[in-house]
Image 1: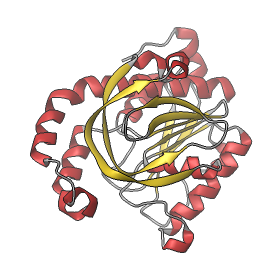
Image 2: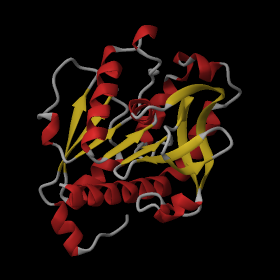
Image 3: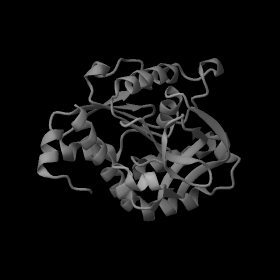
Image 4: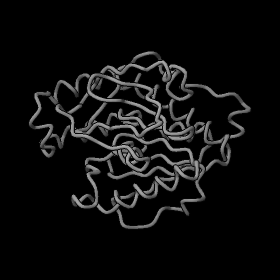
Length: 252
C-alpha cells in the first residue's frame, strides 16, 4: 500500500466521500481499505435499491462511481433509470469541480456526462490485460505511480470515446483505458477496486452475459490467473484510491 505523510493523513481526516455502487458484488472493494487507512468516511450508495443517497450529494468532497453489468446506452434505449439520473448527477459534479474517480460503467457515464461517448467493442474485454501509460499518464498524480505498464482486470463490452479536452492517461489495443477530464475527474476502464470474491461471483454468472458467451475466453483460466495476480493488483488499487482521496482532501 502506498504510504502518505503524516501531514497528508491529517488533511484526509474528516473528508467525506460517496461510492455509487450498482450491484451487490460491485462495491468499492479495496477502495474501502484505502478509505479506512487514510481516515476518509466513504459511504456506499446502493443504487440497486430505490432509496436516496446516505447524505446530501453536495455534502461529499469526492465521488467514486463504480461498475455494473448494465450498459449506459441512453434513456431512449431502455437503460435503467438510475443510469440516466446518475449521468446528470455526474455532469453537475463535473461542473462543480468535485473530485471524481469513475470505474468501468462509472467511467462510461462520466465520459458521457462530459460530452464524450461509448462504442461497442468488437471483442469483449474480460480478464487480465496489459495496459500502458501514455506520457501524460506517467506524469499523472494518480496513475503515474502504477508504473509504465501493468496487467489490470477488466470486464466490459463497451469502450469509451473521451470528450474533447480529456487527457488520455493509459491505453491498450482495444480502447483508451484511463483519462482525466478537467483537473479533478478520472475515468478508468479497469477494475482497480475489485476483490477476489467479486471476480468469483462474476465468473459464476458468466453464462448470463451474452457477450461473454460469444467470446472464446475460458472462465476457469481467468479464475486461476486471478488467484495468482489479485494480491499485487489489490495493492495497486489501494494506492490509486489513497492518492485520489489525498487529492480530494486538497479540494475539500
